[in-house]
Structure formats: structure tokens, C-alpha cells
Image (tube, rainbow, N blue to C red):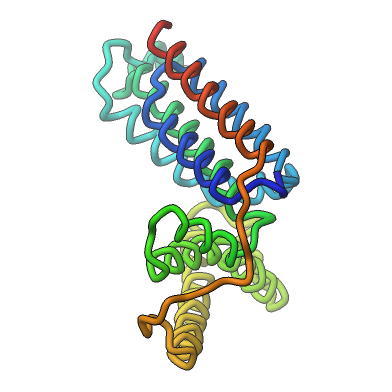
Length: 250
């Protein structure tokens, strides 16, 4: 995967992202998730990195499932046998919980797919691939810079959390839910300030290099579409068609 043309990686990411919105059956969405995991390993990423990327999404998953359980229209209410109260009907539906789980699975597919493009590929090659696909250099640079900031923000969060632990704050690890919520300003405020400072430095650096001056840009890198790239692209398109076809049949 490291030798693939960045344009092929972009095509794979687009196909996987479209699958998240087209697939409706749980079996085909689970199959797409398995494919995303295989692609994750193919680019050389480890399971520890996957768990680290999914960990911040836990709260989002809980909120999504809870919202769908209460508000999704369904015909099968959730009944729980509570000690001393007997069988209690909760104001949520089984269909809503299932739909919430499907939404979370779609988010997991996207979370596993995006690093396929950004990992093991330099920003210069991604920008060059986007410009070869017809995007302007300004738009391509903006997109790649935004994608590149995701691991930077993760590193900042880890650094700030370590600094808080050194100062005796263990709310992020051992506190209960409300304690963690109250402790989040100690994480969010320095994270926002660090991001603003980095954005200012990037702005000064871009202005000093006359970014967007209008001159035609050249690149020291070159892209070549080889047989391996064509093979991977064809397999991806066939797999895309198979999953969509099976989803419509079942």
C-alpha cells in the first residue's frame, strides 16, 4: 500500500465513504467494516493506533445510540424485568437501538478509512494527487492541511493530559462521568490556545512564502500510474459493486 499512487488511495477512500451511506443491511455494513480493518492493516497501522483513534468516539456512540433508542420510530418497545417492580416498559425501541448501532458502525468504517490516505503518504504527494485530479492548489493544500492536523491534535491532547497528571489531576482516568465533564475545561482551553498559536504561525509562514501569489506551481515529485495501481483500483470498484449489489438483494 505504501507504493500505491495517492490518487488510488483517494479513490479507495471515496468508495469506502460512499459505501457508508449506500449500505443498509447490517451484514453488508459489517462486511465493509471488515474490509476497512484489512485496509488499515495493509497500510501498516497497528491495532493500538485504531483503539486510540476510536477511544474519543465512545461518548459520541453512547449519545447516538441513546438518541436513536428514544426518538427512532419503532414498534418493539424495550422491556426490562426490574427487581421489585416487575416487567417495566422503557420509552425506547429495539429498532432504535439497532439503528443507532448501525450508525456507529458506519462511523467506525469512516474512522478506519481516512487514515488510509493520510498515513505513510507525504503531504506533498497528496497535494500533487489532488491537483492532478483537477482541484486548485489552494483547495488541495487546505484539505491536506486539515487532514494532517488530526494526528497533531491527538498528540496535543496526549501532551496536555500528561501535564495534568503530573500536576496531580487524575479526573480524566479515575473520576466518574460528572467529574470528567467538569475537568474537560482544563483540557479544552490549552488545546484551543495551542491550536490558535499553531494557526498563527502557519499563517505567517504561508505569507512569508507568498502563498497564493498566482504563479504556476511546480513539484519535485512525480506520480506514475502502474499496473499495481490499476489492479487495486479495479478490485476496489468490483468489491464496491458486489457489496452494493448484495445489500440490495438481502
